[in-house]
Image (cartoon, rainbow, N blue to C red; front, side, top):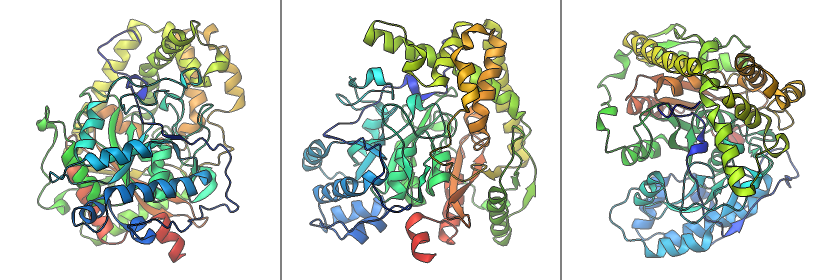
Length: 526
């Protein structure tokens, strides 16, 4: 798409960065069992069990009270990552020395997360002088040249960045796997994927490497992996967070195990330039009618477990006094996704530009993922009519959901239609890979249809998350359900623009009533 008025959903356009003190790229899982095996970490200053169970806020208070130093927390987190990450490949770089120096120089000014180690996503979150690959093999040595406003803000809240987490090429797919960084394995079942694109982040939280890890979301990248790995993930209102555009595109936030951490984080990360985007929480949430649906927006199959997960939450909500009714969102899901893919084609052109600047040559099919190649070719044939289709549809979806929320302030669906896929399950079926290789021979309409068809194999597992990105609304994934096979599934709550704190308060009610299932507690209780 040639227009600069519409921002692409893919996270490519944001420069990223994390310091690389120790590069970690274990492509082969070394665990002997199929579930992450915790190993006792012995470091000075904090007990391993205490560290794993503490929230980010609790760790900050320990530092402030002199019970542990920030440096001791960093050393403990890094030691745990070095010991257990070979099972996961969730963390792709560490910057221990730089983090220790930064924590030693930090002054206590009342920061809510004073001295707490955090991992940031390796894509879209920039730290000056550090890794800037976008997941492209030709850019494997690239470094960022500045620190993003988002990262500066999280540092101002007291966090100390200790490393970078894994992600797929350009953040384009709902699994985490790439030629550059390899597969991110799921703690619940190492043969399963974490989901994407913030897959390394959520695995790091589920495995207790850190109590919080940052990610970003252009089509479900915070919520999809949260569902697949059993953590909490909020996609904020478009423009509500520091550094995010108010035009539907990528948003930045974090995953955690404690709603209270995300509530504090949200308040600290709010975009001061747009306070009007944040609304107060209603006094009585139970006066808000909740609609729910288990129907796939694109007509694909939804697993029995995903349906049960929603039904379980409906039962809980009704027991708490909420009015919950069955009602589908009014949006045409198939049309929405074709608009979404049409809007995303510049990602391929941008990738080619970066590769050409680095190598002096245009990229070839073999250099990138099949979908990056397809978007590049489709963008060459993008038309003014296509741009108008995107603008019209985006405006329509936003209005449809605004009207819907006047009747149903909260909308409940599965986060994902299935549990985490196997790592052997490809993002695209082989027959479509062959067709994508020659997509330049098709006209634009057929190109978009082929992209839709090729992406459907993955989309069928995660058809519920893209709506909130296009509408600009907040959406929260809660880890409420575990299948008989021992795999987590999340449910998603979506609300009108600006109602992020409402969703977090609703999530707190689930957590306060022990409705959330996390990796460690499940392993103990089962």
